[in-house]
Image 1: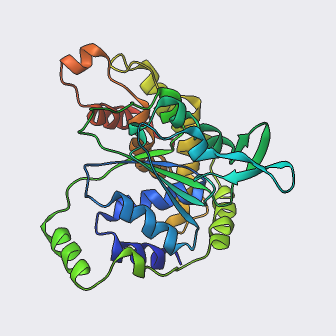
Image 2 (image 1 turned 180 degrees about the vertical axis):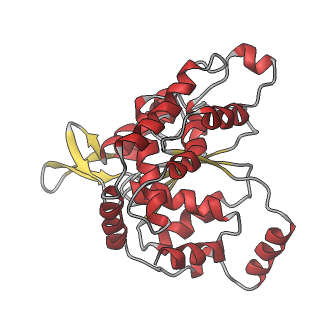
Length: 305
């Protein structure tokens, strides 16, 4: 089932296989994803294809500076006939939500996603509204254009399980992408491979994947290495360790195992840590490479036998 799902998504999203795998890791472990890439590399296509492939309700929020929190969460409208206030759903009330160009909206509107991402609910006028399950936020941002943008604060960036970078396709991928368009193979033609109920069942199976204390300790040791690294402003948070453990369970499940190996932790760590760590001013002046520092720290961390 998993192999078929991966192959199906790759028919419509032309890109590297590891991108699709990381997206599925987040979906099956209950995490959210931040996609970063220049316009036109397929961020929206990837999100929409995933939603259709797993038969999930898909919603898109095109963030702009004038987008309000009520546009996201919903609001209460007074019904003249009944004399009561009724909840009118916001754009968040979908199973998979694309928060497009999330850094183009105000911090107040960005913050309206926090409760939904952390607790699977939204509160309007003191009333809690449960979100449909499975629920997942896929946010996008442009790494190049900063005019009129509001960078995500640390607290909100930490809510995303992974940050996945999308780059230019290579020659073969770009040609295949063009042929798909000419053949009419668009996201509108994507059919479901599994159902949303299957996703919930897979999440239950992923949560049962065995991970020994030594492997949990390995994940924690990697985070501790980032906390001791002087070139980072702050090290990885405890939430990052939890995300790394969950992602490792999903990674093991995708590979057909019911137990986590240190290699699963090692493979998931870069995408879990990248967006949570910021270089100091001195490190930026020295033109240090954040991904290279993370790679070396992971390599230095002692692997449990």
